[in-house]
Image (cartoon, rainbow, N blue to C red):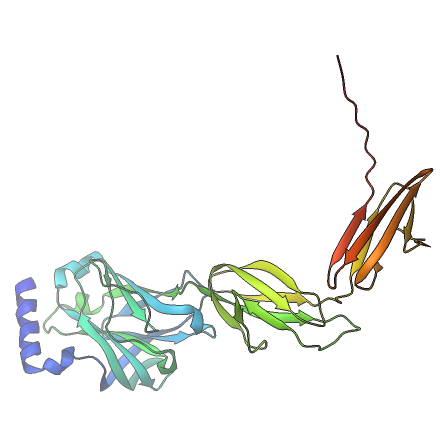
Amino acid sequence: MGMLAAGFFLIIFLLFPGLYLNAQIESFRTFVDAVVEVTPERMNGTTVNIGINNSVIINLGAEARFLRGIELEITAPQSWLQYRGALVMAIYNNINPTTASGTADFVGNRIAFEALPSRLRIIYHIPIRSQHGFRTTTTVSVPSNIAQPAAFPIMFRLSQVMKGLPDEFERTSFNLAVRPILSDEGAVRLVPRFPPQLRNRPFTVLINDNVISNLNEQILLREGEHHLVVLSDDYRNESRRFVVERGRIIDLIIDLQDPTPILIFEAPQNARIFLNNSLIRNVADPITVEPGTHEVRFQVGDYTITRTLNIQRGKTYRVALAVDLTIQEED
């Protein structure tokens, strides 16, 4: 059977060499076994049955930008090993019509075509972006053409190329698993929140030292840790780190804060605290002050301690009086 198949393919190639060229417009009739959708949310993908001379239509979900390709895993029955060279697979994009069930006539742009390998597990990685990084190996085949997202849906089709095979073979079906292959990227959506008294003042956002020019657009970033900086003359400056997950969009909350300096006091209950010679009545509440030099005085009984503070804009200061007891043992 193997020698017969090899000879048959040689004859086809010599008579119709265009069959092995990619990106050709074809008209054909096929039976559509299933229509599936590929999305990052379903990493395990969708598994359907596909018969000989049949096809499966594959759609992309809304977040295709996180995909670098699609994995097609074909699981064949044991009987397939007897019919080496009897089938070819083809992949089409720009198909018309884009939806169908049962038998239908199609026009499509063929972007891949090859004999189905004589294996029980066959894997194809279909790239959908130019920088995909896929490589053909002993177990994985990568078509040379790219299935651009704008040209979806695509169609995967199995066709019989040998005649005179038994009816049992023509009734053979394969399991086809269709899965997303994610890029190492995610996205962030900036969500600024303004203080009531200071709304819609200008501010600048930097991510990894790059200025974000449009705060309303989602920002595509590699998975992992990133650095956020907020700079403003009207709000407090901010610097923090955040983590991006592969294939996910996260809301990055930016709490814009009044830049007026804040003092927070901590002292024993019986302490009296004076700020610029004015007694602080409610020590538990943070106090806002103007930038500049301020004097703080603590009184506990007959004990008094005074300190001068140089207060800067946009800073929070915690001023604490610590009372400690030291015990030292001597010989």
